[in-house]
Length: 262
Length: 91
Image (cartoon, rainbow over all chains, first blue to last red; front, side):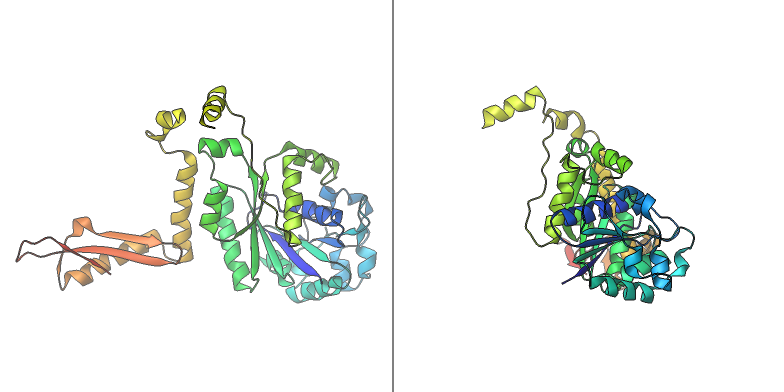
């Protein structure tokens, strides 16, 4: 059985592409056959995050227009032979593709893959409509900021209006130290406001920047964010995994009081 | 706890400010109803009830609840004839 999952957010810059790359890689690590699809036509990005930018010959628009076969456009990952990328076109724009064509494409891909991860463009226009058209399931990425959460709320409404029943949330770039000080909305706050199921939390982590610089998602350092993504992948496959907890560096006073309390 | 004593009582932290601002803005967006519209509706409500009872306009409370979406209006009614305690009618 194959599942088509769209990664979306509304607001740009919250980590959709990074999330799509890491989830794709993580699911491949777990042994599934995975394709990640860059649906942001005109603004190609997923290829550089995956480190596959030098191998592109054909793209999504070529497949849809029949310029090549699907298998010719798919790029195999450097490390995982069961992970493929379908890159987006750089020369066309979002109007080059219709939702019906996307549905047809994802249906064809379902024959070959266990999971198809669609990286959605920011915004709620044509590109968004194309990306969600063929999806069975949606992952909404947000950060604990007012602008990102407001857009996430809009997106959730639109996904529901388009009959996508399984919608789950990833809260990205959590800063446990700021939450503890009360200067960042907590995970519970965000879930209460958006009222959808939590799929995972990703702490703010330098390792993600490093991995993106190198074009090697989940490069095996097992940093907190990478651990978060692996947990998310396991939850996607139906496993129950407890959510990350964060050890915040405690002052000597707090340590002492806890010692006595216990 | 020390931290609470220093900051918690004097000033609300920015996290809870963000939370409350978001709640208000999302509610009005979900209902497709601006804050101005809510104020107008509140005035209309008071006027409607005021036709039949005398209303204590200083103590009216209108609340919006998110989940399930619900509007709660507490409109205290003054009973001038006998000076018993006010009845509070929930609409």
